[in-house]
Image (cartoon, protein in one colour):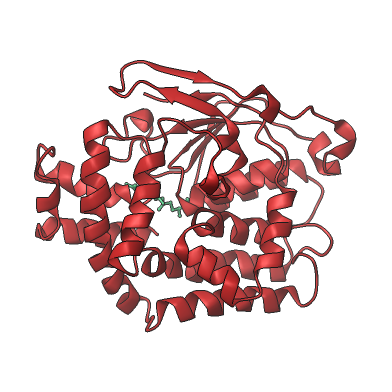
Length: 331
Ligand SMILES: N[C@@H](CCC(=O)N[C@@H](CS)C(=O)NCC(=O)O)C(=O)O
């Protein structure tokens, strides 16, 4: 997806799509930023559970109310979403190491952020979320690292989704040898292949690009004006960029590539409930995490209808523990 961002930036630089943003953007750089970052930025003014709720992680069971002007924001939490910590239900390893204070800086729809969230939720690690505004990124101004996810773990900054997961996993399993070759192979497949199939699919047609940007902007951390500009401008831009991405990644039929990836994954399961056997492992969590934001978009629905991935996906959804720290921080 970093490639997506670079491509998007390049396209923006040509000015072809940037014109769409001229209503509010104050400079070319700003327009570029909007384009570059709109892809996975997301946050809602009001999260409440609704028909499309399954697009969201359990984190979103939080109810968020935000003043439209963006000045006053109050967050209330759905206490029912908080799940009592029952030691007996926790994976054994979680009893050894549980970080105290975990804060995830994210874009709601970012596949890499969702990988980290899937990991935290599976291991029932409470975390706070800071939704980053993808245009000014002011929530991560303090960091030299300019991407998300950033995970602060008891004051320590962790970056890069795979590294974050590996680090925490190793702390939770200090005595275990590193992940087996099969798990490592499929974790790499997620980063090297699966993520590249997503953009050409979710921006495949003007209607799908608009659907994706509706999701992104409805749930992203944008001002009212940014939301409108990014929704339509971003959809138009990404529709064209996704065609370039298809070429770059040698994809001729984007849906075919998505279906093939989904069935390749199911074949890898080889009859097992999860790649990890009777319990998900890090590869299960990675595949699930990156697919989660698209699952209830048209591309994700098509994927489930046309491949064998649905049952595994539902099993994975059921493995996620409700997000237990309902604190949201934002501008
Ligand atoms: N390899 C990184 C990739 C992270 C990444 O590319 N994140 C995107 C969001 S999906 C990003 O922050 N792009 C830069 C930007 O938004 O300006 C990871 O796995 O965490």
